[in-house]
Image 1 (tube, rainbow, N blue to C red):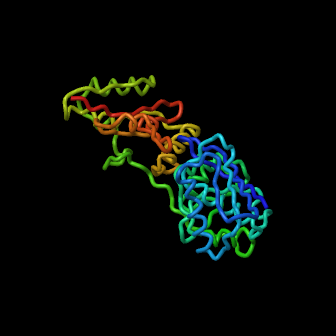
Image 2: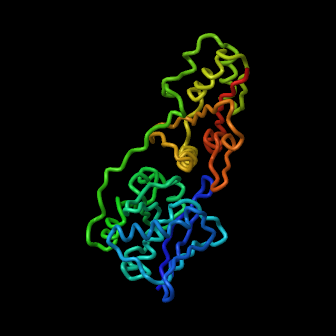
Length: 313
């Protein structure tokens, strides 16, 4: 009794396809996860067991082995909970294998069986090559941006199993819309325009030249001399992002758990890190999984829009 469920894991800001293989055999009851899982992936055993029992689904008192292929790629996060649970149901015969054909799954499971959101829904959905993908309700807006023909969702594992089995229709959920991010500023960026600046002739000229030629610019001066004011208004003179740059920006912000801007907002991203920011927070990094830093968050694909406010005194 064997099942294979397509899914994906997040490496940096890119999704990598993962095949969740579940094998159920006779022997002493046990649950083993192999294939370079991190701590969150290994703990899926307890979350999946509690979610199945809370949903009224059986837990097999047999030996279960889960392989996360390819085995040489490190798997991170709890997004593999849902495919492990579905693979277990298929391997034990509780769910027909034909019901999951052509579907990929991503999602974290709560102990009560609810399907919870995961970071990086956009790159994860993009990495799954199946015609349809099942994601948590909160991840539907991001997943739809990749242009996949079918994006499905369910609130809970019980609801998902009933829909896959054909006992109920797929739920029509009101999913939350992606909200625009303001990069930590109180004033919306669309209200900041370089034309509002009076004086600062050389500063405005430097920004115009940098925007026209795609150059970097360093603003240096005493406090309250207008460095941040000028930097915040640089997006108003930059060209709007094209489709490829906008999708790349969404991909990075999705991996960083930041809200996505509305689809009609094509302004380059703006970030204003504190002058005491650490090196890993600025350039990215992490011990458990690679997190994008401020430089990556301020980059719009090949536009090289590094809008960093450097406060020097």
